[in-house]
Amino acid sequence: MEAAVPDGLLPGEAVDVALYTTASVDAVVAAHPEVDWGQLRTVEKGRRSPLAALQPAPA
Image (cartoon, rainbow, N blue to C red; front, side, top):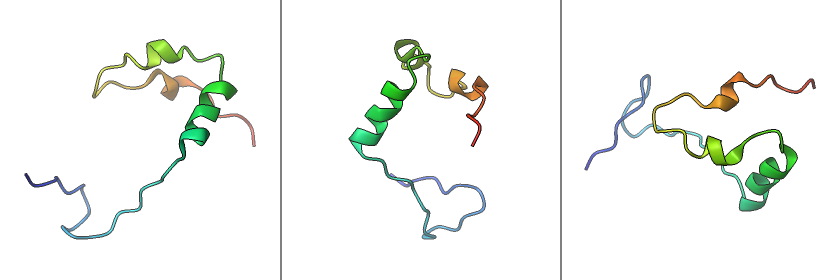
């Protein structure tokens, strides 16, 4: 099976991917009790995440 190449990349080009530890992901859940994580986990593949509607916190 051949992987799809994202638009703008040539086959074999390097892609940067962010890596997160389990602890850092768990910290997000604890830091945002306002999010219904159970509902969020039911979003179907290809659907827009309800998190997209949230406003970023001021820096």
